[in-house]
Image (tube, rainbow, N blue to C red; front, top):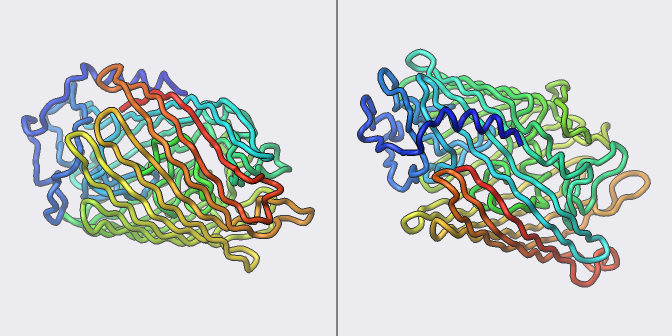
Length: 449
């Protein structure tokens, strides 16, 4: 991971002594609330570190709103996607002059065991490190720069064993099946600019190389309902595989609790070279409508028309649909509960393949997090035939796990966790997967919060 970047941002943070925002000169609490009067109660802002901030002349109300509109910054997740306003703030945040700086990261060391004829075992490292810088431009503009990197490429070109997963390739010629591909080193390098029209409306433009187009819910490693699990979902290529897109431009309009946005982007998925930055035409289109009706809910529906997304089937185009609902509520003094329900459809060559996901996580206190996920997927990539994909099979997976964290300092913790997964296949796949396909992972992690 890029630990020098983390060291720089932490050095800017100064002493880890958070201040009470109510005591900050110039803080306008009205600006912190929703433009239409939403109560900010229930939002966990305990992790925000304002130490070292240069307060004189700083419009803190402006800085505490989102990068794309006049709403709480906790609403923003991966790319330009939304999550509930009541989501906890996960990053270390400081002010330096007009700039608001934030860093957030997690590093997982995982031992993975998948059982059955198609199983395997492997140790690997996964995670991400994200840095963000945001500042006001004039009286109504907001500029944001964001970078995110991943240690995934160091796990090897074949990724890690994961029964019923499929997508991308390790060598440019053979599809990865029953393995989760590594994500690229550069997960996001993006910039955005938003302009506020009054107290409830804004327009924005977002560009990334790579970046995330306006499709689907937040990427799985950013969804509060499952981000503590080191296991990728088998529905990844239905809902959020576009979170690393090498070339994307998104424009959108926000009004109150609604957001309408559209993207042009490079539809080709990343290739097997995980350390480079790729380029390609902005040949694909996505559109998304998002609505946060209350502080606890975030809903979205999206559509995408992708040109030549698969490296191994370049002549095939694909259309996608998705819809999701996220519910998040505070739990106890230091905890939360978050649940996501999502559906996605991939359509190509007159074949529709659906995926359904239900995932939930409960943090009852500062130490423990319990998480679970259930998936049902129609997949035609589990068996490979000479002329392309095989027949479509409906398969499922249920996983449950927990992680226990211990603080090392005010903003760094170490955790130990485990999960167990049950896989479900039709009788036609019994010979391939055996009578009892399942998997397990144990992991330790470092988390910057």
